[in-house]
Length: 185
Length: 105
Image (cartoon, rainbow over all chains, first blue to last red; front, side, top):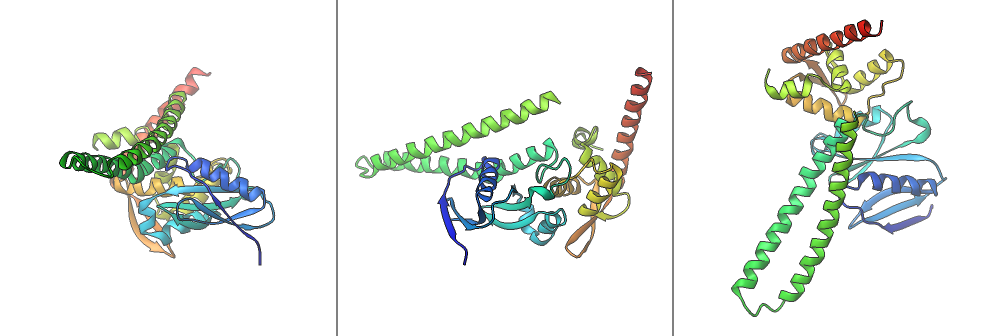
């Protein structure tokens, strides 16, 4: 039986390109991606080191008609692996890539569309959740002066806020990158 | 034809253009990928993520319609609105081409 290795790695919702690059790097080192589960726990299986391109898509409509969605990718030579929080994972050997092909998207419009889908599907729920937590906390603090866990909760909220700021920095960076790309056209 | 259709499809992306051009005959996404590859001598390789996203967006916009399913592949065809949009685009491209020819003589 081949060796199995697990690695914990965090990528925020907008770092799908970075995540794909990480999986490619692992495969080059002889660790083939098996699955990702829990909170960023990546499972790899030992293999021959190879250059394999990994790609992530986020498409809720595709999830609803999985067979047709996956068929399209398989027809184009992409192996479908699995899903994780709405993201679908695909891979294809670098040698098998067609001329000029550099991933599962071939124009800026559709890359922007992916970005928008991630924003609507993942970022907006997170913002709402965060807003609700804040409101909930504020009302609790106001309704009871001796709110014992108040301090702990505030620390937690600050931590979460910092994570959020980081994610939104990534978002802004990516958005800026898109807009710059557009102006140049 | 409403403002949204005008804004998105006049002019349109190369992907949308080839989709409309190919769907004058019913076909599925991968069929379109193959035709375009042949038409452009392998220069344009439409990718599956782009194709899947474009087809579902264009279906929602009413420029193409879903016809039937064949072995897990969705067959689409152009609608009357799609044909009008394609004709506008063809006119625009033709004008571009004519102007370019005149200016570079």
